[in-house]
Image (cartoon, rainbow, N blue to C red; front, side, top):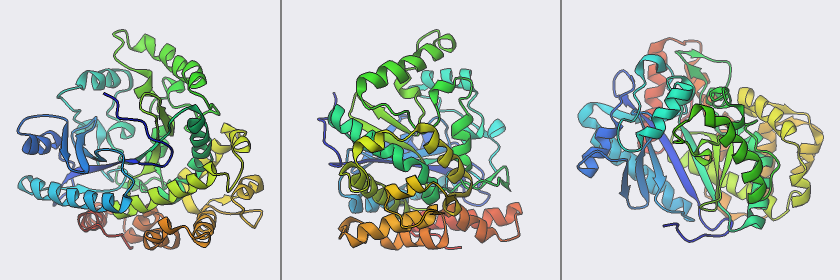
Amino acid sequence: QQPPRIHLFQGYGIELEYMLVDCDTLEVKPITDELLKHELGQYGSDFENGMVTWSNELVLHVVELKSSKPENNLNGLDHAFAENVERINAVLRKWNTMLMPTAAHPFMDPQTETKLWPHDNNEVYAVYNKIFDCRGHGWSNLQSTHLNLPFYDDEEFAKLHAAIRMILPLLPALCASSPILDGKLTGSLDTRLKFYKTNQARIPSITGKVIPEAVFSRRNYLNTIYEKIKTDIAPFDPENELNPIWVNSRGAIPRFDRGSIEIRIMDIQECPAADIAIVNLVIETLKSFVSEKFLDVDSQMKWKTDTLAQLLEKTTDIGPQLVIDNPEYLAVFGFPEKSGTAAELWRHILNRMVRSGNAAMENWKKEIDVILKEGTLAQRIIKALGHDHSKQNIVRVYKQLSGCLAQNKMFFS
């Protein structure tokens, strides 16, 4: 049964993914099924604990915490996530295991350490594995924060989709948290997103250019995007296990069946407070677009996917330090200069909201200030490592990060 539809900005679904790792060595511990069994009394994929539900993912060393239903009280949700993290850590202690944040494990070897979810719903996972081989980093070593935003009808979908396309390229400049893979710095702040872009390259229509196409009605979306995906996956999926709607991997995915768009490109942060602060800033920025405070909706719709995708490409690598030299894009936000860094643009957006008396941002200014002053989590991790990139030092820093998660505190390098 579908829950009743809600209108723009009336409630939000938030999902946070965390890794299960050994408390001493930080090796991945593929025991999410045992964690869920501990609460459910049997193997199962969901444990609903009040405001927050624990769920399994594709791989056994990741657990997802999600709001049980759309919430509009994000402060309450922050506390609920923090309490659930505490409870999970308490249960995991008997296996000498804990939750670890960030969007990628810094030295996991996915080729040898990946264990896929073996219980209910695993047919879909098996097909995926057959087509794409889910042992790569982009499948089995990536944790993100998903934000689900509601829309009621085609008109609301159009406004929301247009607004989301405008801000997707800026998200890595706030959220990048995956600078290390295979025990070394990758040279990119958001390595998870690089893999996200390419790990389904066998079937390019699945991900497109990550920035969704300029499509603003349900009918057009189904006819252009979903039909194409369906046709392209058919040869790989003779049993028809895969639904194009689940397979779609753009950076924002509409679910017309339940009236929501899910933003998929945010790296997870060190603690729920950081994630909820970012989510808040994203929501308030989208509200400004939808209410045409920055730019009228028709003009938003005209922005070319290629232009936005090129911007995203660059923020994926260098995040907030990217100098945006597209004066038209900056002008959309009322940015006073002809060029500026992504960090300066976010600072401008934030200040503009605070000046216009946006109370929603007041609660989260402290967390956002850390990100805009000290850098994205990826930059703070790099800073904390200094010149010592040894495994021992990486373990030390990621243990600190796990401590931040346990206490719901920001990480300072």
